[in-house]
Length: 321
Image (cartoon, rainbow, N blue to C red):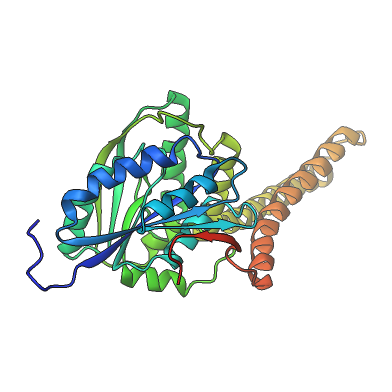
């Protein structure tokens, strides 16, 4: 990349970083990011926007101290844990840059790709996202994630990139569009993919976490998968409709067969208590499943209608306007 012309105002790039109980990682992350962006500062200005999801350790005091030492750092501590996706979205709303790059604090996504992301952005891309070619995690975790990404893509009405996480750059244009959304349970990968524009994937190998613990156990991955499917697909509702139609057809065929056997063939069957009980239980279980699917959508409608704030900031650090 070429240097900025003399007198030309540099464009501001926001590094958005959600954190939760990361007292062992925030300082190494800051050091690593500063080293990577230093050669780019001839062309860009940078700010670091941390959103703290109400950490229970020394994460926020460390961020306060960091903000005193580095004026580029701004930190927002939430009044409670609002969830990972809301934390990222709040970071986007607080970002002042011409573009924002979201990064995890564990450094599994290489900061060295920031320059490549900026190149693609300069070439006209509104969204630049990392595509994980290899991950240094347990094989069962890799299988779960691979199945999740492909399931979301198949069920979604929008084309969602496969094996792409939240490591991405989005332009100011995309940021402003996201700010216009009022989503109680945002799923940013799908929402950003659905916006269109020029979106470019950059392949990379994801590293291993060197300190701290992952905040995404299997239960949270399942919850994220449910959010992704329900936010971007009506396929589960269609499946429930298909199941209802199939059961109705099977039931009708069974009734016709029973009538033929009983009336025309003169079959003398004993009362079928077991058969009736099985059919009743089958009907109850199918109805429960279908009502559960409908209930998930109704629950999201209820949350959306409550119009609650995306997050609540309890404390701030750094120069906050």
